[in-house]
Amino acid sequence: MWPSINLSICVSAYYDHVLVLDEGKIAEFDTVLNLFDKADSIFRSLCDEANLQRVDIVKIRNEHSVILQSS
Image (cartoon, rainbow, N blue to C red; front, top):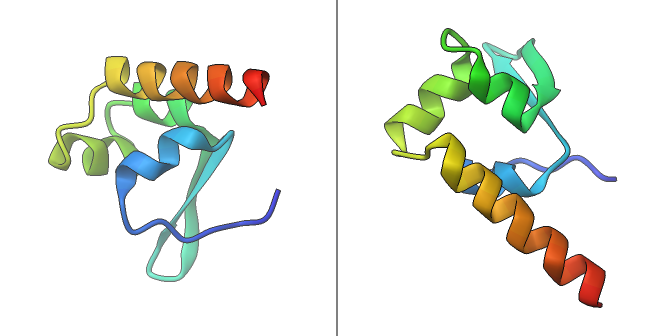
């Protein structure tokens, strides 16, 4: 899979892994849910700012999985 730069945190829910940069350096790299579950992660703070909850991420991922399986 090709890397992408997301301007919307919600788009991250579609990806297997997320790489978070801070001042041009790798700050975090893990699965979307693992990063979300770390209360002190940068990714989690971005989700909190966007009012994106774990249940939203799981729902997006499940819906995306269904679409991929039907195509």
